[in-house]
Image (cartoon, rainbow, N blue to C red; front, side, top):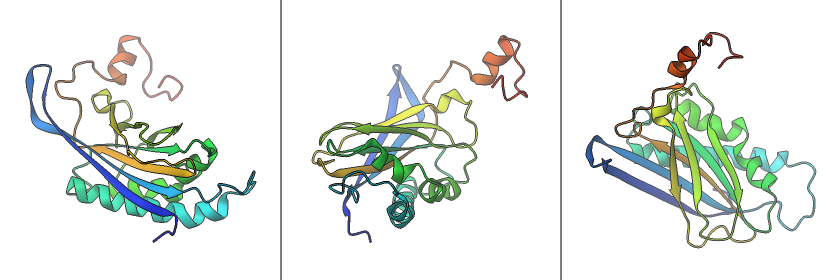
Length: 200
């Protein structure tokens, strides 16, 4: 395990009612976050971040993916997914971004759940107990608006000023009673060509 790892935090929420109606089945939102000491903190401006990216990102990606799938019960149970990083107040945003914006991190998750879309993300900075927000999208279809959700939680004692939080989030379905259509119905209404990447 990484010497920088201080703790792993999990978040688990079941939504049973929405809009005064039962959610059937209940929507489950889950998240897992790792709190790590920033390996670049106190070293001035570090030009080459790659050695620590290669050392840390795969370990964190696998750790969080395994923990999240265990929470969900299986990779197939996950329908929407996303990632996030949060940097302590004395850390560069680039430091948190370095650990999540690499295939060495994200591909663990993407491959484990059989996903086709990219992972939505946030990069933020804040003191301990700042809310982590992980935007989700359908793992197969980025235009499926029913699965545009956000996993939100905070870690009371993190990030410290010299720490980073990296996190993964997931849902087991879309918003209960979703009824705003999707990207493709909008494109059809506007007479746009959904086969043309420039229109999508």
